Length: 310
Image 1 (tube, rainbow, N blue to C red):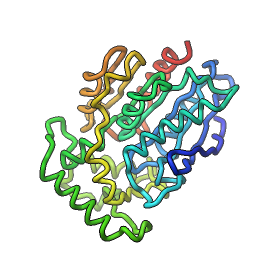
Image 2: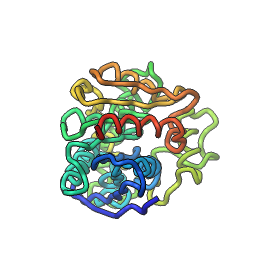
Image 3: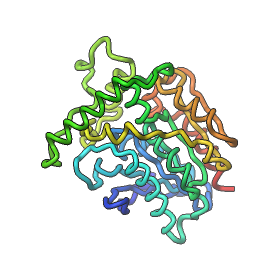
């Protein structure tokens, strides 16, 4: 497997750190097709994004992974800030970077893959950026809806006035207390030590610790610290309201049958127009699809091959 090339590109006022995977030697000719691979919230490019990028490279695609602004090796203060509109712009800026790789990338064969929160960010990006010719997602979620619903992941969770008020107060208090110190250490969004996760915690957080707190997904630049000023940025954001605008470009959304976030993919596909597909993998939860690619990877390769390499 070839070693990816370290690259950077601008996004708004930030510099994004990325890695470009070239098609593996002897792989099928995909005619310069490339996939932008976007990482989960609190993640970095070296985790699940890299796993999917390696599979895509082996299948003949260029694959670009990157750290979101304020995160990983990319620039921006405060560290760990989750700004949905920056995250969307990062994805669009990644497409711009690829379009300028003359002689390597065919600008008419660029697709996108979003994982977890980036399944939402890439949906939002694809709704308004027609350069994205195909969109795939894995375990997609919307950080706006999660925040407005009080962090609940179940399908029947509803927007909560109390959750919204609490999130806005926490953001306001954080901004007041830390407005003159962008380097203040943010709290952890969730625990990654299994022993620190309460026994009665939702299964989502137990599964998160099983990934991020073990050799499966731990990484020194992925510390799950998110400044509370992120929450007023997320309150007014929604990933899937205009999902129908992705059509006529193809959409594939993959999720596990046991994922607490499955309902996001279901409703997003329902709101989209053709061509679209929901691919549910039996027995898998949200985080298991981060590193168990047995069924998701072949499905994605086939999807991008048909959508981009005709």
